Image (cartoon, rainbow, N blue to C red; front, side, top):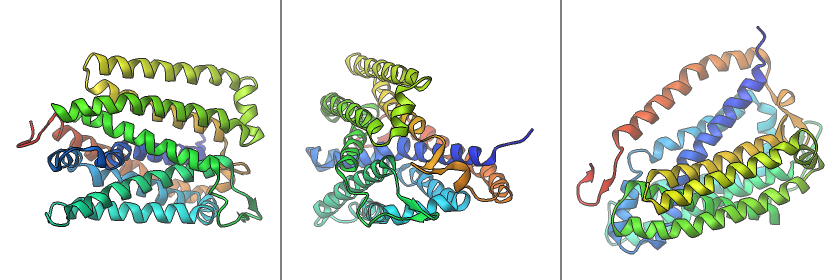
Length: 334
């Protein structure tokens, strides 16, 4: 049996990125919602809900970026110059956010400053991730196996739209996470926010989905010519089903269901992006196989991935299992 190592690694990188979005999305969403908490105690509860897992969530970002460098070096060499600005700003925002997460517990006088830093770092990181995604969807200009565009090609109305969509979507994940993890007035407030954030997220997803096929003729043919046209029916149907589950979960006070439904929005959107991109690693010209390292390197790295990825999944699942249940504002988890 012959394994397509480049295809396998493209799947692993995609899995790492999706896992990061799923796990760190609600984490960043908490920071985006920070100014809407009414009291310091509510903010403490919001932070405590992710305190045991927040730094582990970012492991997947390192895995995705490091994996891209190791096994798709040409893609890395093209993408980084094209997206230096949003990626560097995102990383600085994540650093600022991490520092504020630790320091706000150490002071009373400067707590408000660190609260602002936590909100700003979370929002800017989410915005930059969305902008980078939009820039990738638009396509990156390549000549002679190198980036041939300008410094600010990433900054367009479409990329700003995707940036706002990610910020709103992460806020939705944060609200639904708090519905799942909290009780009382804070939970009730987040239930109210979640309804409007869901409507805004779906509207933005719909707008981005309508504009995406017009970013490149390949996308248009992929979605509106046979057999891809079937996806144009299947994906909206999936989103409608998830929307029904979301609102019925809120109505029936099934606290976990809205969170899982909101995660489903992101998974469905990610699948849609994969359908648009395939077989390109860097649209519109660089395919998975053109960007991949030699098979010997891919095989060597795969041995490490086979050991490392299940290990990361295992300790991540264990952490979430240990700290399952609702947050008690006074005593912690119960």
